[in-house]
Image (cartoon, rainbow, N blue to C red):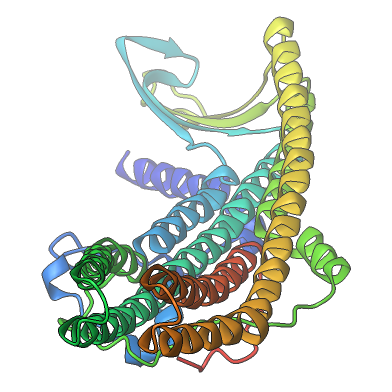
Length: 458
């Protein structure tokens, strides 16, 4: 009896291994063990904020962009979600677990060769050929869509960082320009005070100069208050704190005055946009889900083996006590037509929904691209206008008005107006350059390649 039990156990063990062997056919869906390493339970999966290494603006845009793209929580979360979907491919292509059954008889059943003492069986369900492969293809398409979501998150982080970087540099330039304007108004105040002491102008000119200088000092304080939210945005994008008291002076906007042709950018966008590639992968997954729904008409089947232990018979028989072996075959009958029809209708509707979503996304991306290109071109035009024409004339006007005021040939209000125009044109020049860089940042959030002429510039 022990020998028979051992033989039975060996046979069932080999059958269980054989039942699971078909999953090896889906090796192309295997996940690299290194890419799906799981953090040990006793390890901290995410470093606390206090332990993050700080950074400085002087590290350079290229280094900071790389750090933001690799360490941003947004990108890392999308990456881990892709890992989770990728790990589901092997699950969707695996056979169902086999069933092992063990039974004993309450009352022994006598047979010609002896009483039946008990039985053990194993059965394995096999889906219809093509179901597992299609399920694996569908999950692989969903994983590909999520992989593109990682790339899209990277571009979003890139855009957010460049926009915050641009606004912070503009803020530094605006502070410098406003500080110079405060010094200019202080100079005007000193001139009016000296003329007042010489009884050449009234005290009202001195008071108006002081009021104008105080207003400009208030604007400077407002600019200083904008530093903290911009710093917080940069820290959130990089995923690390900014070093205390960083130096932003001398940093330039990251911009290219000459972009590729709009037709080239549009073709690149439609061909390699992560959003569109992800939607195409989702469309493939929907088509594969529709194929799976069609395969629901085909039955699944199962194969099983039962081993029955036979005791020794009281009657002398040549085969007395020999165990019995039975092979079973079962086939599923797909009678639930309503469920199958509903699955087909659902798969078709989901496929149409993704197709419409992809078309909508195409139009929106093209609109965003054209908006960014137009904004970039307009900003470049305004920079040239202010730098080459308006600002030189405004500075010349201020110089001549100041000389005329000192000689008594111009009113004090004309001098203040000329100073305001110089300030407005200086700020407008910096704002136009910042707008060009912002539009360029928007392009970097749309296109899957870096368009930067020189990312090493600070």
